[in-house]
Image (cartoon, rainbow, N blue to C red):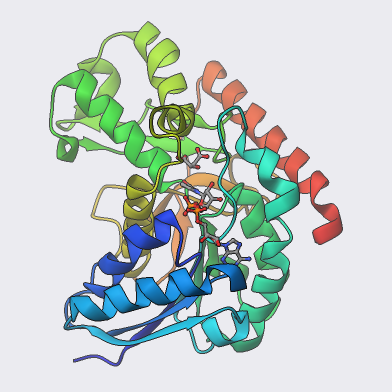
Length: 327
Ligand code: NAD
Ligand code: LMR
């Protein structure tokens, strides 16, 4: 057996927390040979509920689970962590956009970034899920100057998976047969879900689904607005699919992207594709499996696609301006 990995999850008593915790404890991120210690962070009023989640985790008697810590102190939660999921924050309700959460949620990520900086392993990987996740990731990263910026990422894996699902359903194939859509930009309704490089059964998606109007008028808005559609249907924001995407994101970081494929991840821009340096922007990335990622280079845009992506970049710049007091 390998030595245990220490994983912190904020918002452990929340919806996503409830869905993600058993999967981490079952070895879905680090594999069936690696024990895990779970550190769950909550706000004081949710501590009792968190204790209940801790009891349930104990009652699963997971073979790989070596310890559970429930706390309301960030420095206890993040101590010696290998991986942190920053989930704990307010979700949007009906009629809101994710960026409407920025004033309330943004400040959470200053203190949590600083606590990660102080007590986590310097090799820690931090995945930001709490919305608006790109800009919250920017804030957390900024407050953790001793941790490499590349160790921070925000989750657009859910949008990536939604794009795969929409293409598979439209083409009448299994999800496994769809590869390489791209989510460019922000985890918001300005994101550009790009099908131009996607493959279905090893053929270009746009040849298999030869219907430009469907891509532009159905595929793009469906992926962009899927979070809203789920809130309308459930009365609550996505949780099962969000937790699943967070597992996929972490699994990819620590296990790599399969040969010939990429995923979408919001990472710090190095200027690739004209995205201003430092913005946390979703790009196609490949991963080697050691926690690192690389932005896929050399992909081309149509004029239509470039205009869509630029809109989302502009929104990221606006969000950065809104939180400049937190940076
Ligand atoms: P939820 O309300 O069910 O749970 C959030 C939990 O976080 C609550 O238990 C709350 O007490 C806790 N919390 C609040 N502030 C905290 C803090 N400072 N420290 C620790 N815990 C804190 O919400 P949810 O459905 O689990 O969603 C959580 C976040 O994830 C929301 O911001 C939501 O919008 C976001 N989200 C992002 C994606 C994505 O694709 N990036 C997908 C789904 C949801
Ligand atoms: C999602 O994409 O489902 C989440 O970001 C929740 C939301 O507010 O849409």
